Image 1 (cartoon, rainbow, N blue to C red):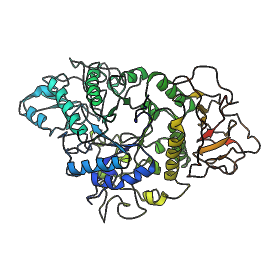
Image 2 (cartoon, rainbow, N blue to C red; image 1 turned 120 degrees about the horizontal axis):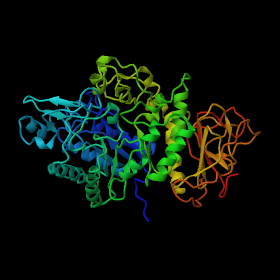
Image 3 (cartoon, rainbow, N blue to C red; image 1 turned 180 degrees about the vertical axis):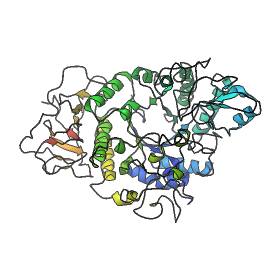
Image 4 (spheres, rainbow, N blue to C red; image 1 turned 60 degrees about the horizontal axis):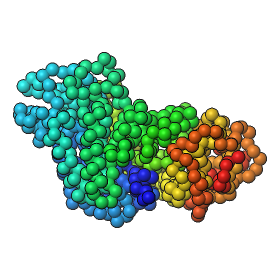
Length: 564
């Protein structure tokens, strides 16, 4: 049986406005992305996901789409897009594009016609409102000149479609065909649990009942699954394993699983992993819930809508956030399924918290009257060079659309390339090691006995251990260290032999296998994990042998058979 490319893929999210600017206007564009594709190939990802680049007034960073079949001149042209796809495919990279089916821009021709009183059934106009609130803050209803109101679950500039109108269905099937015919390999579906609302739009008992993940008349209506069944049929009719991944916010793993039934979406984002606190217990629950309910798992730590995970994991110790971010990445890459990365995490970029009010552009900041910082802090343009007005993001003297902090120079691609201790080289090593060993082991995990603050699992001859506690723990017997997110012991290096020396104090990580079911299906014997030594950061330090320090993860090669 052929394994589909997306099952174990590493997908890199590109926030188009903030990745690379070729035109010199301070805004990222398609030509800038095209020039940087070799960087992504060398990083080791399998696919890129492009956030919206369609014509838009940019009330919400392009998620207010005025034309679903074009390219905004800010980002280039349709010819630029087609050249980008061709170059990506030449480099072995797949291309996913964002589709926004829950709402359009208020400048979309359909909504402009509705404002003139024509064909209002394509949106949700009512004579009376209910108590629903916008996700960005404030009421979800705006009144038009003739006295009616229209629903917008996000900004007023983003009116919600009425998916009970057949013309909306046909329109989006045609939009998908348009981009599939231009070579895209798949779609990321924005607000995939949206689209339909309860038919009578009832009031909510409490505002909290509208939160993402809540069971309510607002999200997750059963009719949405018929939409994805029709989309799956369309995708299956194209060659090359085209796919769709949904942005589904839900607290219920079984609800998430409904979106990825065999005749619906191929994948859905697993936000429970992103939302979990720094806790072995919390991580294990997410892994168990995911692998026992979802046939094809996804894992993600950051995206363009949330605080960067380096900053989320910070403590009073300024180095903790980055150490934990690297450890979480290594644990994530060892799990069965695909991994989604967000641009800049490979550089260890933190959330930019001190953006001045006059620089902010996110509607969340404005609709909350400044009470919420919004999402601009994770969208600051990438630093490519150590110096310059934009750290190499734009050519010449152009200033980026969001200001970069001075510290970005030291975190730039140029500063980190070739430095074995850098976050960038760690990511390159981790992705190379994953490609070489993880994809060849069983698509299931076996939990190993461990301290309550450690997470230890096995896939064939690979053992991954993550220490979320405050004390060092001993490593289980192993043949060699494949890769670690930080110093281990005795100067051990990635690909080197097992560290020796006296055992450290503290509990052993990865003792006898705990009795109970293997997670993700039956464990089968896999090939010995090994092969050439993976280049990249040195793993080792001044600690005694066989030690896993706090806030550190490691991949170990073990002999076939039980770990004792």
